[in-house]
Length: 218
Ligand SMILES: Cc1cc2nc3c(=O)[nH]c(=O)nc-3n(C[C@H](O)[C@H](O)[C@H](O)COP(=O)(O)O)c2cc1C
Image 1 (cartoon, rainbow, N blue to C red):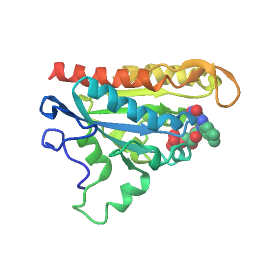
Image 2: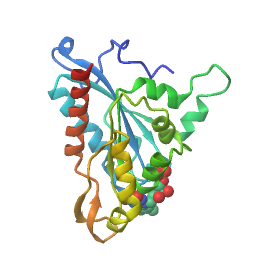
Image 3: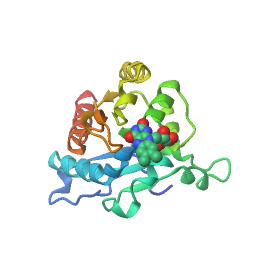
Image 4: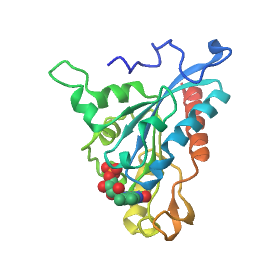
């Protein structure tokens, strides 16, 4: 799988280009997209992560693991250049026989950090329960728990205020996920309340902070 290379061994420059690439550290970010309407912000979030990383001398490469539902909300053509989009179909089309690379394992090895934004109620429940029935949840189930993981929930306010969500968000935090809380505003469904995904700029800030923190921990 030529598109995937471990950051330790990948010396190729990544986007965005820099005037002094030698001072930049290469980072690989896996961006998970789920079936929340907030997935319309995936292209903007990807750009925000690239731009903010650049300001911190990080040369970031992004791959996206998109659930089938998330693909209703954005198109590949909207993504910044060099961002690779993986779907559930890629998981199976890349594997023909024993010995072939398994995409969710390759992505897990490749990524320095995973951020699921938006994290919808369905995928939240699957992650907490350990279910893994698509590309994204397989990566999360196989995740190296020494590497940072960030989620930004997004859902209707009644779903957010539901006791199940309360319990699952607590469990996510106990499992070491950095949870970027949603915000209160007019929701896409017409309701008003808490549940909208945090702004992409804020999520990007948390992602870059976690990447920098990871460096100091090593
Ligand atoms: C237009 C539309 C918007 C949706 N927005 C949300 C949302 O913001 N949050 C949420 O938890 N589910 C939302 N859903 C429901 C999810 O898409 C649904 O639970 C789906 O099964 C999630 O699949 P996934 O977790 O594999 O991506 C929405 C559904 C539709 C049709």
